Structure formats: C-alpha cells, structure tokens
Amino acid sequence: MSNQFISEDHIRDRFSKAMSGMYQKEVPQYGTLLQLVREVNQQVMAQNPDVPEVAQRPEELNRLSVERHGAIRVGSAQELATLRQLFAVMGMSAVGYYDLSAAGVPVHSTAFRPVTEAALQINPFRVFTSLLRLELIEDAALRQQVSDILARRDIFTPRLRELLNLWQQQGGLDGAQADEFVQQALETFRWHHQASVDLATYDALLAQHRLIADVACFRGPHINHLTPRTLDIDRVQQLMPEYGITPKETIEGPPARRCPILLRQTSFKALNEAIDFTDRKQGTHTARFGEIEQRGVALTRKGRELYDRLLREASAEKHPDNASHQRHLSAVFAAFPDDADRLRQQQLAFYRYRRNPQMAAVPGEDLEQQIARGAVTAEPIIYEDFLPVSAAGIFQSNLGNDTQRVSSGNPSQAAFEQALGAAVIDEFTLYQQLQQDSIDRL
Ligand code: OOG
Ligand code: NI
Image (cartoon, rainbow, N blue to C red; front, side):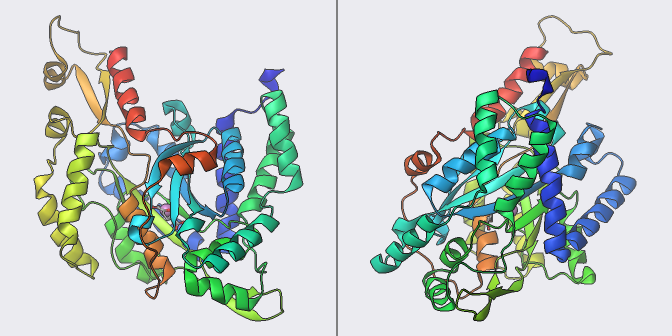
C-alpha cells in the first residue's frame, strides 16, 4: 500500500514549481527577475568555475535551479494550524521563531521548510509564514471588526480539507491525489482581484496599518513574493533597472565576503494592483513583489551573536544608497573572520566534513590536522533560514514609507506555538546535528 504513495519531497517539488508558474503568470515582472537571475548565475559559473556554491558539490546545481522561498501572512490561529498540516504533507516543518513587532510590524513568524539533508537537496522550498498579532491593534472596536471579518472566511477549499483528512488516515497520497492536492493547495495562495470588504472598511484598516488591510480584506493569504537564489546579488541588484525592474534601495544582511555568511536579500518594489470592493467601488492594493537572495554558511550561536552585534553597530550610521551602505557594512564587518579556517576554528560557522577517499587516515590525528593534510574536507553548511532584521527591511520597503508602526510587543514564541499547535524547531539544533552527523560518518 504505502509504496503507491508519492514522497513528501516530490509533492513539495511539484507544488513549488506550480506556485512559481502561477506567480509568473500573475506577476510577469517576477518572470523577468527569474530570467535575470538565471543569466547572472550562468555568467558567474562560466567565469568562475570554482565558485564555492557549486564547485564543491555538483548536486547543488539542481538545487540552485529549483530553489525558491515565498511568503504569506495569515490572520488567525486556525488558519496557521491548518497551514501546518498542509505543509506537513509536503515534508515542511515550522523552523524558527521571528518577532517582527520589534521592527514595528504587527506579526510574528516562522518558516515552513524541509529539514533533512536529502529533502533539502531535492527541493529546499520554504514559506515564510506570518501570523497577525491582533492584540497589537490598539483600537478595540477595530480589533473586534478584524477578528469578525477573519472568522467569516475559510482560506482552504473543502476538497483540500478532505485531502488533508485522507492524508492523515492513509498516511500518504497517491499520484492522482498528490496532483489534486497541489492544485487545491494553490487556491489558498492565489491572488484575488476582489476584496471581501467594502472600500471604506479597507481604508479604515489601511489607516491602522497597511499590513492589517492586507491580511484581513481578502479571501485568502495571497503569496506576496517568491525568491530565487542568485550567485551574485550585487550584480543582479545593479542590473535590475536595465530589465525595467525597480530594486529596493539597499541589500539587506551582511556585506559581500570571500566566505559568504547567512543570507543577503533584496527585492523589487511591490506593485500597485486594481481591486474591486464589495460596494462596487474600485481601488488599489500594494502587496506583491519579487525578491532575490544569496545564501552562505550557517552560523553557530556564537557566530550569530557576533553578526547581530556588528549589524547593530553598523545601523548607527544610515546610508540610503546601496554602494555607501555596503562600504560601511564591509568596514564594520572587518571584525568578522573571513576565511574558512578561522570560521571553523573559532566555532563561528557550521561545516560538513567529508573524508578524502584518496588519503589514508592516520591514527591519533585530530580533525584540524586531517583538514590541514587534505585527508578531510570541510564544506560550508548553507543557511536555510531567515533573518528578522532583513525580513523587517523587506516588509518595510513594501509597506511604503508612510507606514504606521505598532508599539513593539514582547516576542511571544509560546503564544505563536499555541496558535500553530506545535513547537517550532530550533534552527541551531538542526545545523549542529548536520555537522555532528558528518563527523560521526568520518
Ligand atoms: C515576509 C517578508 C520576509 C524574507 O525573505 O525575509 C521575507 C513578508 O513580507 O510577508 O520573506
Ligand atoms: Ni522573502
């Protein structure tokens, strides 16, 4: 029986491709961005055959061409909890907790993503998922209105709910059911030209916070961006205007380095799209954009503390244009070691260790001695998660400069997990485990 089931990884692969197809149709500028990223990735690989992202692992090439992340924002605990089940069908678990209220955005978030090495290799598709924090809306009447609107909608199709039950009963989905699941799941992420409220309600929520209007005024949590992975984000940022795309002013995250760390991101500005309201009035809504990312090595807690400290230090000085922002960042990040030996020896970053089959092991040698002799290689473990300060920067650039900020609530991982119906996985534990597994295999 169970061998008729399609693996979770392949359902995820189909879903991420279907989602990318849908988003290219809905937002043609995203298709242009994909084309630009493909061209730049090809140039980088042609000019620099030993670019670390691919030279060390040819199988990374498959990953690079399918890799995407996306983001959605939901309004209630029930919606979040059902999403957890939906993503479980595709082998995606909630990893990490991100408090965005610290940056004036009334949400907290997690990333649904695959967690095993094998699953990440097939397709690392992730969905950054935010839950509106109604308690941060100060106006009590408005808070009640939003919660009433949200209580009236169902963001999942009836057939999707049936398929989720079937998956639970059977322990999997066969080929036809998997295809149907992908189609039904896609409906949750689709754009709606029609709002579920009248224009006056939309305007009132917009005035409270743009994000509240985005979450509450539509039938579903439209996917608001998709993000391919590039091998040269500085080049793509520079080329965007030539392709008719307006980039966000600055690239988020660490500066360019010889050994890339964590995650660098930039996006194009959200489009202003025509909306029909329930009172037949016309208006517009600004939500959907495109983004690119470049990923580097995952940092240990110690490395992450250093990153956070340097980023804070750098933020004391504002540089609105990207070139001077990057120069300033590079100067501050001179304090972050930039060679693999020091990153490893100071336990700042995670590595995957492999034995060189051509060289014999020498008894009594420690790991660093084996690496120095070339008997063991250390390759960076790629960071698969997100960065709250960068995420806030992406949110802000798409909410417009007139955005009202909410007072920063306390981060509340416990409340988030209660809504989710499960604990989120700690990302550091995952990377530590991958590194340890590779050491054990030596
Ligand atoms: C999510 C923004 C965060 C990222 O890549 O950091 C994000 C959103 O705008 O809903 O996607
Ligand atoms: Ni993103």
